[in-house]
Amino acid sequence: MKKLLFTIALLLASTMSFAQTGDDVINEFKEMKNVEFVNASKSMISMMISKVNNPMISDLAKNIESVNVLSMDECSDKMKKDVSERVNNLKGKGYEEMLRAKDNDQNVLILTKMNGEDIKELLLLTVEDNENCLIQIKGNIKKEDIDKIMGMVGKK
Image (cartoon, rainbow, N blue to C red):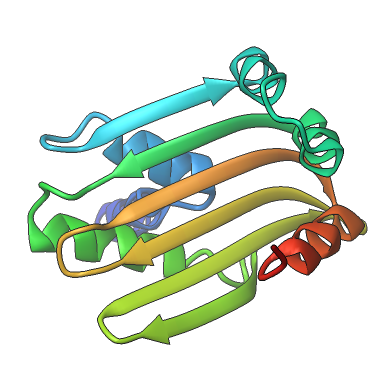
């Protein structure tokens, strides 16, 4: 009986060690060797946005609480693969795939966590040969704002 309880406890502990949220992925890897981590708080975002002369961008930024960036350019291939797997494993665990794209040697994955019709969290993972990056944007972003920004893409 003790062996059975020990085995169950060990299995539970090992499953809990896998990242369940974007925060878990960020926290797991941000202190690792060769990882560059940047956290921009709401006040920092407000300061940066005050310099932008586009009201559409300013309105969107008002709804962003924080931006976290993990840059893994100098990390081992194993670590890069681990981050990619952790992010991919978030699908179906409160996150849905918004976009997946491949262009030559660059892969992009965007996952979102929704709160009703609003985006609560957006995870953007880019994987290239030497430039891997995970960006986490948290806030209360309206889908309409994303549509407006996407409408600006390509316009000059």
